Length: 139
Image (cartoon, rainbow, N blue to C red):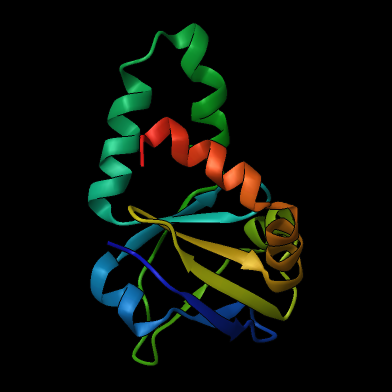
């Protein structure tokens, strides 16, 4: 399970260190793709296969948008000896990644956020909205 929040910096070449705990959970290679709410999704090979399987099982009339969104800009990443990966420019642009980024664990995936965007997203959450969501989980 991917949990936690980690602050890192992107270097001038577009490389960033993936938190070591995430590297342990994601494996030797993993996948980066456009995510929701202006972040990037980071999926293990198992998570990537599950996404592919679910999207492929949908009728093409419903799947084509998802296929284009998730798969067109996706890349396979393999950390170097220092734990860094290269985030392609197209994905950095999509997520508005500047120098300061935040990695978060989101259970079955990690997410990469521009730190300012992550802070702004969190400011939109209220105890009331979280309580409503928890009601649907019957917690």
